[in-house]
Image 1: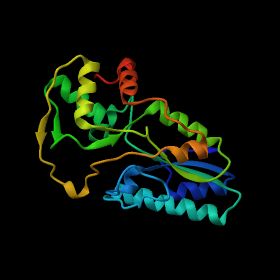
Image 2: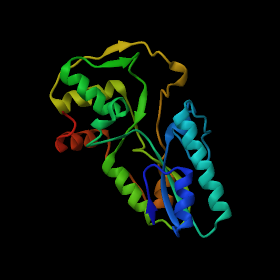
Image 3: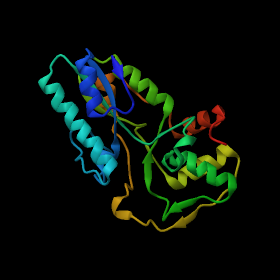
Length: 220
């Protein structure tokens, strides 16, 4: 087996050249773009709205075509959906919205795009690690979602963070400057991940945020 979180095509080719016969790579639900959730692999249209999503889709296409012409390889792709958890602070503005909103709430009221009812499927890092370990033991190539399977509105997220951090913040709503490239609802159908790699998420949004807080890394 062989695993790298970010696996460009050149690394795949070099790994195969040096004898690797199993690869687990990271994709993203950004490949679905503005398609209607919940996302079902092979059924929901891929329509990425930004360069990041487009690059992940190109990697998927390469991996799929590569396995067709190399039947002795096993390649598993995981479409991550809003991963959050300890030690993400170094990512700055690319850190999860859970982390970013928690930091805002420690200082004052958080900012949300109007009306705060946009939904996100968040998956806790411990579940992601387990999904990767299961994928590394899988014997057939596949491409599956890697989310919690349930979406949470930003308004509900603020309520959960208030309870967890023992705060009483109120959201301030602002206009979305780029609504045309914004995913207003991300949510994964997780049945294929269960069937293909045996992965069933263990954390829901509340237990994940609680574990994050108990780790000591949610609050700087």
